[in-house]
Length: 631
Image (cartoon, rainbow, N blue to C red; front, top):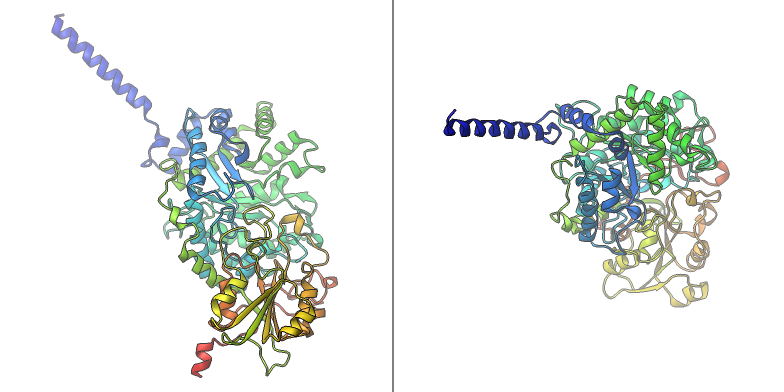
């Protein structure tokens, strides 16, 4: 063979080798043109057990580094309440942090992107300067699914503005007892209202296309987030409203009251479902195979992934972590796909690996979990767009979103009393008058307005983020010549001596979350009642209750001229003044029964012993000043 022929052969061999190398490098899971199941199957068959278990592990931001992500193949990171990169961190700071963790995930052998989750339960509420919407207890009052869908869309934009693609919302609990510390996370005691409010899911995730597979997770691109229906199931029905306790109810009752909103959520393409800390008839939900696998996954055909609550598997035993290996076994076998560890991730990974190697947990269960997690990540487009950018930072706390929140505040207010005589209403208030008093612990306090899950896990009193207090709102609304006097807790002598035309008193509960909010008394924070008494016995007054649920008010009702339930309205207190002073009319109707005495609880509409102070559906209405003037 001649020199030229030899070279031709060598070149041809090299070309074949190069073509083969290219073919070997082609990974179907990285090709967005491939069908979803082809991508999932291709990636799953390439993964080691270590990589699979990493995908099932969600760890707290506080213990996360790029190196940890890479070393343990971590699939998800979470910011718990109050877990942020720095106090008052900017959207850019959040993005930089999230991207740093993502770089660690992408540097692994297979380059599987992580998914970052956060408790955006009433807006992107961990983040300074975000728009904080009313908590769900107020949104249920609006009976307005279209409004709630818009709130979902706005929340998605603000979550994405900080580089995060996954929100642990909505809570679709049906709170049957206001003594429960999470009652404000529930839209209503009535499952039909809760069902209607699942319209927040297409707001968060996008509208499911008409030709899309039924009951299949759906997230429509980079301006939307994966949602999370929680807490499965029955968390709002625990005995005496005790958080994380036992819900005693038969199967038909569970299906009738607590399950319907999950059917709606799954139909609307919710990406994930979070398990409840509570038990059903004595069995911990985190260990309930019948409900998590048998009903949710098989009967309802839910195809997204099931995530634990924080330390949820730890609490399968009493006391917590009494037998952690058993808890891992019970939780995974029950059907939990991703575990919110959140800090002891090495122990979790080691225990789960050992349980699989010993055939205590079959590989089929691991593959089911990882398949579901990958499915959501592929649907979200995380493989194509894993890194966050700065394109949405201007959405955080935008004026448009604040106006939407202000509208939600207006529509969530319930007017419970208007005048000591029916023919002498106090509201709407005049904007032009000589001198008015604004009083109460909640009149000039953004933190108290927002409640729990705001900046910190528990929330905080004080002006902790950007917003408009009730006092600010009043000053913004009245005539410039009207004197507004603010005194947080005036004595009766002061009120009488100042000769006020009327007073606005804002009192209520201090911020709380979860078990910290459980209450046997349901009273407002002192000096609330004494402030009410000092003011309302001396001058005409409108009392605004800022609370996560109905509270004791009947003994004081005769002293009050007008009474408004404002729930936990969030940052946009201007919405309260809009209605008080007649720019808009009151329209909200109670989505919760307002009890006379805590001795009546639990008491829900339809109960034989139903004897409320204000019944479910109650709410007085007023006519806006403009319409009144035109009549």
